[in-house]
Structures are given as structure tokens and as C-alpha cells.
Image (cartoon, rainbow over all chains, first blue to last red; front, side):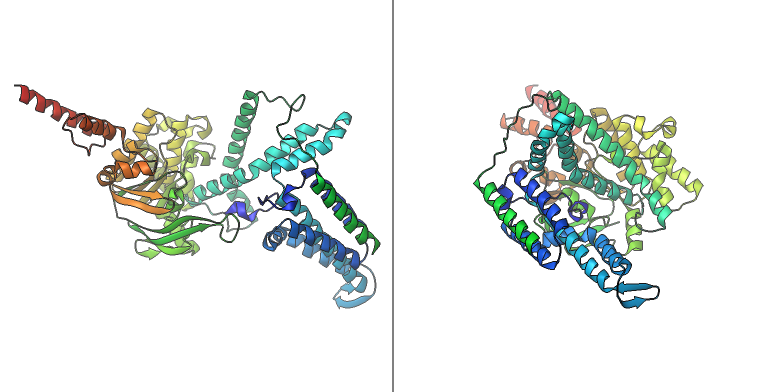
Length: 263
Length: 287
């Protein structure tokens, strides 16, 4: 099925330690992780960061298969980055391919980029894998709260993200249904050149857009019918609270990051 | 044209946390000219089952035979299969996309690479078969009523001129008149020789249209027999949260009240006959 081939933003329900952490802790942790990842120099630092990621995956009870599946769609970008870095970095040429030369510095640079990208993608995907979309946007809304004063519509942004995340699987299912219906009328989405293929998308995209707009209309009406009028004065059913867990996890991560920066 | 499913098992998303067994060991045969009804509670695998019949899904285990030939993944064979076995999905009006009704119905025939005269003939025939007025053909499908859009969508599948037509909930969401007229059109198509397979929650539609019913429950065949056989098992159907036609309920209540009426009454017309017979019997008794 189509929806199983898209893993971005996918949530893996569970009861692990990581699942039960406050979403704000997880968001800040991942943010910090990404920043540290770009500050780390040398392979020992990346090894420490890799160990941190492995620990998180273990604590979150995420099957290795899920993490690898998340990497598949970005594999192309990784390969491209590695190749470009290997060839384009000036330095001592150790292997030449016509006008192109692979340099010692290039290989080093490429390996660093590969480590960075892999860890970046695996770790960020872990955030959505262990956090229910609704918790994620709740956490984001809290974190963006202070910026409301300078005009950031925190609640509206969070609500938009909630809705977008909520409708990804719905629209994927819908796209699959329409594709099947048109295939049953002899449509062919796979063969032909670029122009023919682009044209063959029309019978899929028109109904998909029509239905997306219809859904948006219905949803807006349903929200207004329940007196939704934005974030002003809105109370919360679920209030986020940090616990000992969060402090412990934060301390452990901070220690890990410090080690990665020092080694 | 005959279709046979042999020990078909289908597993959604195998090897992931979402793995789900939608069909287990299903064997069903559909004969040429049949009108087969498929009923079952929500999530019992009805839609998954019918999608095996024109190669939109492939069995995880078991096989599907169409006219004795096993359905495989060969692209050309699949194209031929989908041409022969038409499929009308739930809410088919959601698949309309062209600027005019005519062009939308012509989408299928155009994909078959027919010449223009042939395409025009087929569009006219398909529009007539579902009872669309000629003046509608030049309008945009998006400005029609729900019932009209449904008919345009069905015409779009009919225009493929297959031997078999599969319909998933064709009458859901239609008003009573739209429903009655669609039921009539489907019956005519079947009488003209088209093999039909219909998934529906409406026992009334089943009673009026089909000759055989397969009942699915949790992905397995729970009952398979003539509609009279299946509708005579009210208790078994109730345990699957299914029902019999309302007229049959009336007859059951009358029987319980001590009146001698037949119980295999499925449609309103049959009910009228049964009541007439009952009243006539009373008249002759009192004279």
C-alpha cells in the first residue's frame, strides 16, 4: 500500500521510556542534537553521537528495520553528496577518473558528510516515531509560546501542522483509491516518457485536489460548528508536565553531547 | 465469463507493525451471467476480495482464475483483464476529472485506443445504459447532482464494455428515487448478459438484484448460497450484525402472530402477492 511506503512523520505507537517523555524534552533534545552534530569534528565525535542515537533507539524500542526504511527515500541524496564531496574537494589525488580526481581530503570529507546525514535523518525520524502527532504539535505550541509576543501565531501554526499530519495518510489512501479506479478504466501511470507520464497524472491529481478542497471545507465547517476561533483564550484538556524522567534524560543527553564535543 | 478464487489469503503490509490478514482461505466461484452479492460487516474484507477479481490486488496465497487463466502480474495480460472486468469503486463520482461528462465517459475507451466513431458509439451507449440525458453530456461533471455524478462514473466504467462489472456499494448515499432507478438499470444490464458482482450493505438491493449471496466475516466465507437460503438464516445473519430485507421481517412478525404467510418473501412485490393470497384465503374461508 502507498501509505506504508511513506515513513516521513510516521508514528510507531508504544509505551517505551522515550515514548513517555514530554514532547518538549524530545523536541529540544533533537534540536540540540542537530546543532551539536554540525559542531563535532573528527570521527571519534561522530562515534559518540552514533552511540547516543543507538541508546535512544534502544530506549525507544524502535526496530532497526523501521530506521532503515526511513533512510531509503534519502539514499539518493546521501550517495550524491558523498560522490560530489569525494570528487570536488581539492587535495592530493589518489585515484583519477578522466578529468575527475578522487582526493584523500575528498574521501575524508565525504565520510564526514555521510555520517552527518545518516545520523541527522535517523535521529530526527526517531522524534516522530516515538511521539504521537498530537503531542508533537502540542509541544511545539508550548515551545513557540514565548515568540507570540513578536507576532508568531504559535497556536495557528501548531494547528496547521496537526491538520497536515492528520491528513497525510488520508490523502495517500485517497490517491491510491483514485489511482486504482483510473487503472480500472485503462489508465497507465507507469509507462511512457516524461511528458506522457506527467499527462497521465491529470486523472489522478484533479480528483485528488477536488477531494482535498472538499475535505478542507468540511473540516473548517465542523471546527466552526464547535466554536473554534483560534488560540485566544483556549483552554487545554491535556496539560504537558515535565517529570524526573525528562530531567534524567536531559542530563544524560547533555553528558553525551559534551563528550562528543571534547573527544 | 467466469471468475474463481481458490484458497485466497491476503495480508496487508506484511512484515510491518500494521500487518493485517484481510482474507483467509477464501474460495468463491462466479459463473457467466451470475449476479453475485457480497455482504458482510464493515472490515470483513469485501472490498479487498473484489479487488482480486481484476488484478488490482494479488493474493498472498492461493490463486485467482478468470476464464480458467490464472491472474498474474504480466502488464499486457493485466490490461486485458481490466478491460474485461470493470470495477466501480465506492463513491465513484470522486474519480471524475474531465471538463465535460462526455470526455469523462470517453476516458476509458480512449485508453483502449479505439477510433473516434467507436468511442462516440460507446459513450452514447454507456450514457443510455445508466439513463443520462444527452444534454448532460456537454456539461461539466462537477455541476451535476450527486446521483447524476454517480451515473456518469458508472457509465465511465461501462464504456470499457467488459463482460463483468464489479460494483462496490453502488447505491450508498443516493436518494430513494436515484437508488430505484440505478437498481433497475443494473438489473437490465445483467439480463442483457453482463456478469455482475455487487458489494452492498443494503439487503433491499440484494433482494431485488442478486441470485446468489456470499457472506464474509473476518476475512472468511461465512455463508455462500442462493439469496433465499441465506435470507432464511436470520439468526446467523444477526450474529454477524447483518439483517434480512424489511419485508422478510414483516412476514416473520405475521407468522409469529399466527398468520400463515410464507417466510421466503424478499421484495415488496413478493410481499404484496403473499398478502393478497392470505386475504383471498380468508375470504374463501368466511364465505
